[in-house]
Structures are given as structure tokens and as C-alpha cells.
Image (cartoon, rainbow over all chains, first blue to last red; front, side, top):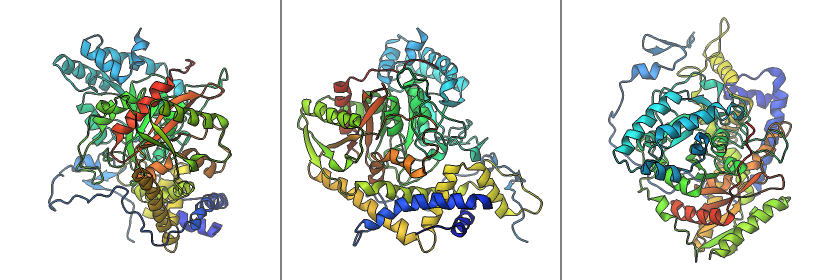
Length: 95
Length: 496
């Protein structure tokens, strides 16, 4: 599997990271080095092996679906780059 | 001598605090004075002297009132990955510049409840992604150790590089670290200190900036094995806010340290004898096995056949989880937001914010993770890695079922290397630093790095012991035996 500039551009887009056009070939090269390393996994016989979901066998706890905490609007907004009238403010989303 | 106080272990300080021989305020002032003189180490990146002195005064009052908690009055450094209320918590990333959490992580909450004192926040690799502390937005943390009389600045390791540097240089009595692929144990080995990664689920992850949630675990970085036992007890325990934290009792780990390992079986995994392993590391390892044998343990050869696939497995799973965890840094709720151009919409805001805020290694891992999770590749990469991970864990399960109590390996493939020395290497070269430690995260096991020797240029080297799940007490007991037998007492010569 070899990653070309076009794939690197697509991955950057999916990851929502702006990568300048002239940086794409180097990025593709780095991906190829890492993915080349990962390719070793194809040597392993994984027939009949269940993919690991939890490293320690444990049953996740359940609780009643009810509000247990909250009411911190000011704290939630305290670190926002742009908060107005009790909301997070962002550029226009819908045309 | 003020600076002598900062050299104390937690256990020694505890005894002297109780005896009324020293106060928490004196200990704290001594640490703050050392920190002020040590900016060249780049270890403390946010200092909190006022908070420390307030906490120290409170601890002194508690000790006078007969407080019994061994962590009461102990000054600590805290890795920047831990959210600490009202104190910058940036995970060494520009994307979290200015972020001051409105809440406190569970682990640090427990430490403060025990009476411990926060001296400040410690340098690290950005989002804990790195093995040399060179990806930090704050600049490098520097190893207090040097090669002989050379002045070359060496890495303290990573990602918990600031923690390792601060403890090794006696700026604090101990520090918190986190370990996703070796980030406690490798820096501990590079700086001649003790670093313990507990069993996955032993410490709550709540309030610790997430890197790879199925691998991340917090742990103590200390001057002795006993200190690791004391500090772990204060950090550990079930937390309803982390559903993966184990709801099982936290034992008195220190009480498990008896110094008696007669009849214990220690496994030596043949797959860890890597091609090209330096003779010094081989000797260190063989010497460690001899020390445990002399103490009455049985040394057996074991096989962990999937070891060579651990790093490639890790470099699928960790970036995949990171790409998901780091999706939250979008310029909306906290941290940095890029300045936008006329006509930029929300997509441009995300893309510019993340390009400006994340460093090169973080961007690379987020994108690798995005790729291995993307449609068409999910099965080939991510699911295959999860299957190999199951096999890696099964290797350990079988070794333990075969009667092995703990496993002895080198902690790192080399001593600390020079800052910048790996700059031209491809990313995979840097990843190889974690070759002995990463298996332990994939299998969720406890692992501890103990300094046992020095290389030909006088740099510390460590051995790793791997224990059975939830058996940190037994693991610490073996580690204590190694510490006692190795008698590692060397300290870096002060240059900072």
C-alpha cells in the first residue's frame, strides 16, 4: 500500500487539518514510512481471533438514566475562544 | 542545608514530618528554591508557589493534628496532562494555550485530599506523543545527567520528560506521570529514577487529557520503589466518572514490600533479546536476573511470541484512538482558535485552528489514525491490530498461567540520547524507543522501571519488571529486591 499526494490531501481533509499543497509530498512520504512499518501485521495469523474490545475483562457499570450533575453554564463557557449570551459562537454554518 | 531536604524520599520525608523534625512548609520552600535555580532543565513549565505554600500550611496543620496519610506534606510536580483547577493545563500543546480547567482530575484530587502539595506543572511531549520531550510547545526538557564530562544536552525521555528531569534533579520529592506506550518507564530509565505504570484501570483517567484511552494510565515517578508504592496508593481507586476504573479495593502496596521473593518465578522472554542489542544492555539484564536468583527467585526462560508485532499494533491503535480523542480540539469550546479570513466558514476554522495548534508529530498521528479508521481500511488496519493485540495479551496470560510471577526485561534499548540527535531520523526510528515497554500497555499489565546500573559514559540504565494484573504489590516487592541488590545511588552532577 503506497500513499500518494492525493490520498494525503484526502486524509488531511478528513482530519480537518489544513496542510499546504507543497507540504503534501513530504507528508505522504512519512505516512508511507509508518504504514510500511504497520504492514508487518499482515504476517500474523489472526484467523478465529476476536478483536480486543477491553483489555481487562470487566462489566461496564450501569446506572439509572437521570441527571446527576450540571448547571455550570458559566464554567462550561469560561474557556471558550468566543462565547456570547450564554452560547459558543462560531462562524456561519448554514448558508 | 535547604537543598538536602529536596533529596528526601517520600518515605524519609513522611517519617521526619511525623517526628516534627521538618515541616511541610520547609520542604516546600526548599523545593521552590531549587525549582527557581533550575530553569535550564525546562522541567517546570507552570509554577504554582502560592498554591504550594497554602497547601503546605494546611498540611502542617493536619500533621500537627495527627494526620496519618503518608502523602500529607509531600511536595509534588504534576505532569501538564493532568487538569488542575485554575492552573494552566495544556498537555504541552499550543492548541490548549490559555486553558485553565474549571475542574480537577480525579488523581490529583485524591493526592490533594491526602495532603500532598502541588509545586507546579511539568513539561512533556505534546499530548504525550513522543519519546524525547522534543514535541513540547514549551521547548525541551533536559536530562540532568550528562555523558562523562561532555556538555551535550541529553533527552530526559518522554513523554513524561519534565517529570523525570524534576525528580532526578531533586526539584520535587516525586511527580505524576502517564504512560501510553512507555511514557513513565522510559524517562524513568533515562534519568535513574523509578517509574510505575499500574494495571489499566487502577487509576482513574478522568480529568487527564486523553491520548489513547484504552492504553493511557497514570502512575508515580519517584526516587525509590517504596515511594512508588506509597504514592500509587494515594492515586489509585475506583471513580464513578471513569467507567474503566476498576471497582476493586486498593491494597496497602507498601505493606507488600517484604524483601522476600524466595520461591517466586521470574520469566526472561527470549523475544526481548533484540538483534543489535548493545552489550551493556545485555549485561545489565543478565546481572538483574542474577540479583533476583541470588535473592531466592527461580529464573526461567519464557516465550512471548508476538512481541515483534507490538510496536506496529501500537502504531495503529494509539493513532486511531488519538484521532478520535483529539477531534474535540476544534476551536469552539476551549483553547486556540485561528484568526479567520474574510469569507471563512466553520470548516476553515477547524482546519486552520488544528493546523496552527497541533505540532508536527500530533498532526502526523491524528492523520495516520484518521487513515486507518477510514472506510475501506478499518478492517485491514484497525481490526487486524485489535486481533494482534488480543494475541499479545494471550502470550502474557499463558506465561502467567505457566507459573511466572513477574517478567524481567530491559526498560529501554539504550541510555538517554542527545536532544536533536533523532531530528533527521524517520518517525519509526523514534518509535523504537518503546520496543520493551509498549507490550505492557497493549496487555493492560503493571510495569515498573528500576535503575540498576550505568553505561560506559556514566548514564543511568534501567530494568523493567512486568507483573500480573492487579498485582502491583507483588511487583513492587520484586522491584524492591532489585533496587536493594543493585544499590543504585548515583546522582547527576549539578550543572544547572
